[in-house]
Length: 248
Image 1: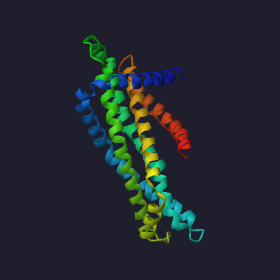
Image 2: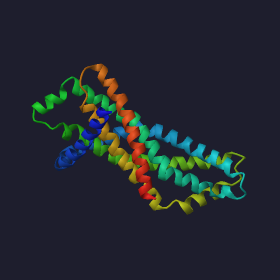
Image 3: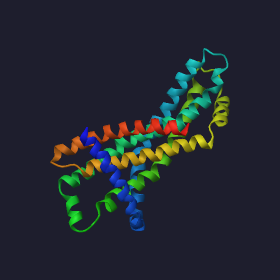
Image 4: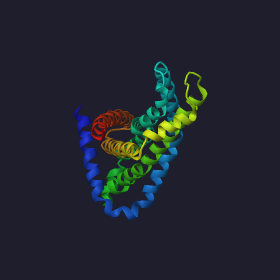
């Protein structure tokens, strides 16, 4: 437990140090774009597949439940739309980013730390935060909203496919889209994007903190990757509850 608290404390320290290094952003902008593209390339396909089926499952289960109440299925579009953009879109994207990108960041930085490459950077008077943390953090902040919007859209499309193809749902696609457009507004989408940015901060900061604090040998690298995934998911769910309560 103490190690987890120390990791989170160091993650906060890295965030403040990154703010102090923002004056060097013009020199590191290319690296930020490179990391953002890598994160999108690694995560986009699995986000799309998961979101499509998540929207379909949500529409199927909700449509089955609402079938017992006459006329209630007319609200299916609003339920799927709001659930995806306010909660499921940013949350599922954050979980996938943790497993696909956060673990890779921790493994890379932990390897550099174990084999004393971080110490070599410090010896050459080069800031590890400026070279290793800031580009990844800004890259995550750039890519996370795009991934979340992509997740929302495919989730809505998945719901529409189920509405269009499952007989137990008695409404047609136009009623589904009409309900979605009526209840899903810019404020709801922005609430989800706020969550997405906070989740990205948590993922990258914790991943970098655990990786940079790794000591020992190759066995500790694997333990750090596992610790990153567990810690990040707990932190994301905790943050999600309090942010959702604040945004309501």
